[in-house]
Length: 298
Image (cartoon, rainbow, N blue to C red):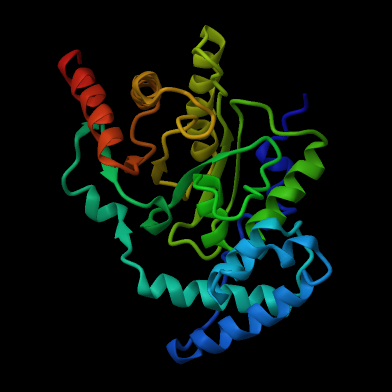
C-alpha cells in the first residue's frame, strides 16, 4: 500500500498554519448548546437513529456529541463548525489542564536532555506539543457514539476539523493507513498543538512476532514523524493497541519503552519531554514496573 509522506499532505491540511481559536464568553454556553442541538437534531430527523429510544434519553450536550460522532467529514457549514469550536473552547476552560512542562519537573528518568514521564490522566487535557492517537485505518475517528476508546475521545474534544483533515490525508494517499505508520494533524480545540495518528497492531487470540513488529513500527514512525516537525519538543504517547485492538498491556508496555528509549539513545536532545500516558492505576503499575526494569538494566 502507498504511504503518503509528510510533504505529501502538510500543505493540503494547512499543518504549519497556526489555528486561531475562537473568542468565547462563558455566558454563551447554554445558547451555543441550544443552537447546536436544534441544528444537528434537525439534520438527523430523517434518520432512523433519531427515533432510537436510547438517543431520546440523552440530554442536549450528549446528543451533540453523539450526532457529531456519526457524521461524515465536511458535512457541516462553517458557522456550525465555528459554533462547535466555541462550545469546545468553553468546556476546555472548565476542565483541569495538565502541562507537560510541569510534569517534567519530576521525571521518571532522563536520556540525554530528554525527560521521560509516566502520567495517569486524560490525554485530551494534556497541554503539550503533540499527543498520540490510536487510530483506525481510515483515520476518521470512531463512528460509535460514546464508545470508550481514545480515538473517540480525541476527535470529540478536537472538533470536526480533525476528521476533515484525516479524510483529506486518506484521499491523497489513495488507500487506508497501513499498520505501523503515522500521520500528523493540527489538534484544533485540544490543549495540545498537534495529534499524531497511528494504526496499531491488532492482536487476536495471541501476540505474534508480526504483531510485536507492527507495534514497534508504530513508535518508531511516530518518533520519526515528530522529529520532522521542529516545533514538536514535548510528545505524549497513549498505550497504543492495548484498548479495542487487544494487545495485552503487559507485553505492549516493554515494547513501547524499549523502542522509545532506543530511539532517544540514537537521536539525542531532539525532544524535551516524552510522556507515557495511561488512564488507570492498573496500567500505571505495569508501565512503572517496565520503566523500573529499564532503569535497572541501563
